[in-house]
Image (tube, rainbow, N blue to C red; front, side, top):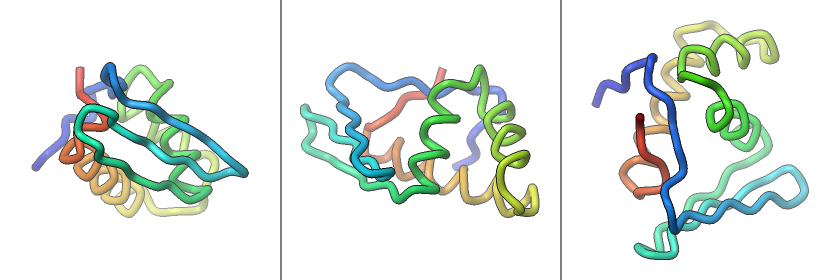
Length: 92
């Protein structure tokens, strides 16, 4: 699945996000799907959920982490695909 970098992620109704000590859990109360995020995943989540687009989020994360663009784009894509499959996000 190819995710367009111009897309914006949103959290659908029925999805709860709880952060605790730098880590997060996302839970879809309708499907009972959940996903845990470590500290880096939690930061990725925060940036992705606030940025106007996935491309903008990647630019922000590139400023914060020492990582090649291609590696970060792949990691972000993998995360978004998993969250989409679990119905924890939608793309606008």
